[in-house]
Picture (spheres, rainbow, N blue to C red):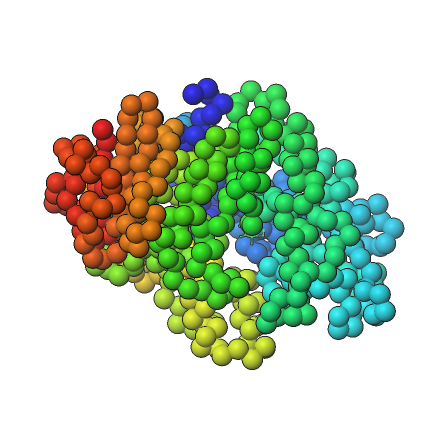
Length: 568
Ligand code: NOJ
C-alpha cells in the first residue's frame, strides 16, 4: 500500500462538537472540550477525527449554515483553540478533517448580504435568484419559480421583499444555495479551502457535495403524492451535469501538489453505485470516498418520516451491492450512524437492555469487517441509544420542528407525527455524550442545550472504559484489527446466504488468508450449517473476535445477537 492510500486502513471518528464535551459551562460543547478528550480517543485507537461545523453561524441548522468560513463560532471557541486541537491531535497521530459546507451559506454570510442588496450587485449571481413564476405576483400563492420541495419541508424558494425576487434554498430559508456556475464562487471556495489546509488540517468531509451542480433552468419536479403541488426536484440537483467537473477542478486547485495525501469524503444523498465508482476512482481525482445513503433508507418509504422495520435481506443485498460495485475501482465509506441518523443500535439492532451490548458489538463487527473506511459516530462506541422523547416540544432540530408544523397543519394525527419523530428525528443522535455518572453525564456543568438521555446511568464512557467486556473495548479491538490484519483492509468480499432472514454471513479473502464473519440479527439461536457451504472445514479455525462469553465451539449455532469472526 502506498502512503497515498493510508485512509484505507484508517478509522474515522465523528465528533458533533455541540454535544461532545462542554468546557466553559454554557451547556454547549466546544473545542477545548474536544482537546480534553483526546486521550479517550487515542485509547480507542482512531486515526482521524472529523468535526461537524464549528465556524461562525447563526446556528439555524446547528452550524451547517455558515456566516464566516474562516472564523470559529464563539460558542465553540477560537482559532487559537483549533490550532491547539490540531497540534495536540497530530502529536497523538490523529489527523483532523473539517466539515466543508459549500452547497450553501448562511443568509447572514456577507456574500449573501451583498447578493440580496440589489439586483445589480456584483454578487447577485453568486446565488440562485429568480423572478416569480410567469403570471404570478411575488408573494402570491404558487408564485415560487418552481414547485420543488425543500429537504426541511415547504418550498425551496424564499421571497426577498426588497428586490421582489426569490432565492433558492434546498435546506432552510437561512441556507441559500451558492451558484457554482459562477467561477468567482468556485475560486472563493477553493481559496478558503487552501487557507484551512495551510493551517494544518488533513482533509474535508464535503456536505451534500453532489448538490453543487444543478440543471440550470431549474424545471418543476413531479408532484409528490400527499404533498402536491410540491414537487420532487432531486433529478435536477442530485449529481447534476457539472458535478464531476467541479470536483476535478477543486482537486486541481486545492489538493494537487500538497506534500501529504489528504482525506476527502463527499456526502452524496441519492448517489448510485455507478456514479460512486466515477466519484471515487483514484485516477479521476475527485474524492477518496462518498457517503452513500442506500442502506439508511431501507426503512424509509415514500417519505423520510414514514418508516418500516428494516428487512435484513435488503440490508445485506444493499451493502453487498456497494461492496461489489466498488471492489475494482473506487472505495467505500462504512457507517451506521452520524448526526443525521437515528442511533443504529435502536434501529438495526436492539436497545432492549437484555441485548443492547451484544447488538451494539454485533453491528460494529459487521460494519468494520466490510471493505472500506469505517466511521464511528460519537457514542456509538458506547452503544448509545435513541432518546425517549416525551412530547413534540422535546424536538429541537429544524428538520423535525418544520416537519411537525407542516404535518400538523396538513391535518395529520399529532400522535402519528410524534411516533414518526421518535423513530426518525436527528435529535436522537444529538443528545449529549454520556461520559460518566456525574450531573448531566459529565457533559457540562451548566444546563445542557439538549437533554441528556436518562440511560446515562447505565451507558457511559467511564464504566465502559473500566470494563474489558464493554462495547468500547470491542470497538477498540475492531479498530486494532483493521490496523493489524490486511485481509480486513484488502480482502475480497463474498456474501453468504443472502436470503437468510436473521443471519448475516460473509467472507473476506486476501493472499491466502480467509475470514468468516457470522452475525445473528435476532434474539433467537440460529444454526449456521446451511448458510456456510463448507462449515466443517472451518472447524478448529481460531476465533479472531467474538461478542459473547463464554466461548463455544466456533462452528456451533449462534446465540441471540452473537457475532463471530473466524480466520484461517
Ligand atoms: C447534511 C448535513 O449532514 C446535515 O446535518 C445538514 O442539515 C444538511 N447537509 C445541510 O447542510
